[in-house]
Length: 480
Image 1: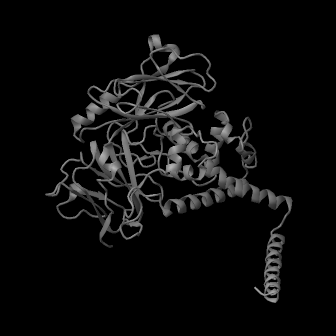
Image 2 (image 1 turned 60 degrees about the vertical axis):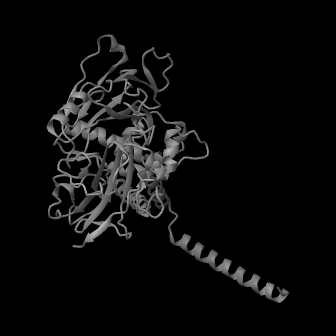
Image 3 (image 1 turned 90 degrees about the horizontal axis):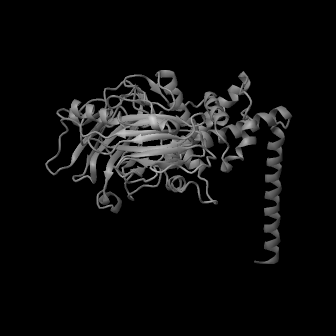
């Protein structure tokens, strides 16, 4: 380059930098730097990050509070659904083809707590025991630590020093609270099989270790057909749940950076959280911005399992690696990906791909969002690689819960009357009306709402992971 040309280029670049700095300075000056405005912007940005960071803990507390408010069940008992859940179970992406048992445990007062799982004789459990941050402590049942022989899982409080007694499966928790999600597996939707699954689940026991010699009878509370609303609230109430977690749980070392961040919002251990109307308005605005950020990342899609097909695993790989290792990698903490994951569902699985595997999709074959007024078809190929069953379930796109006021939410390989094609494949339809003659293969949708799909494989087998069996895209077959 000639010296004159180089000199001209430097002058041009320099002028551009000066102009940019001038614009930035003018913009900064336009934004007030008064103490009041600086404090307001600090609340806004820190509140957005608090929502994303706190999502798994708030998700868990929402379910706990739903139990306390809508049923008579208490911590260290068991709430269950005596039939496969209907839309009134407004937890995130629940399974309407299983019998749910949940125990929200807390060891702060009781000390070590036992969750006793029966042997897999006459039934089986697909269970996950997680802490207050939904970090998996252990899986239970045939694919869990007891391997179907049954076992006494012993939850040890934070800092517990005494060696655990023999005959127990010790689980060292770094939080006082958490929950056990115990799915009693169904052979079919027939009344007799439902009754057997319920009876088997009621053999679970929950009691303090101190009372093991004469364990009290476990109390079970039926929540079937009760409105159990644990959907995420993107408003100021989110921070009330977050404050409850901060007050009740110890700070984890990896999260201590949030102590001052939350003080900015009025959340501080040992002090009441009493936001005034102006602060509540700011917190609501921040929660909605966090919702938009998380929703946008979800819409962009997770990495797919098979290139060219839109179905993706229901959790991002970095989240799976982190939770299964206990966040052992000191150079990674996937808070953003974790936040997205826990807007969609709940629990943590220690041995992913053993008892169950989940595939999710929010767009059809052509890349368009699912419209509840249109009709779609999913063709499930023959010889689905499952030891138990597969199911396809529709959820509300906005809430990620079962679509309200609809008679059912899924079609499964154990559904009564389901029709199979001559080649062994199964066509599942999603739409506001059933195709003629295909009622048993139809999942209803709300014509006024978007939806998403979750495909479950219970007892997944090698062809899924070896990719010799692939679930194809969902195709639109009719419009409004």
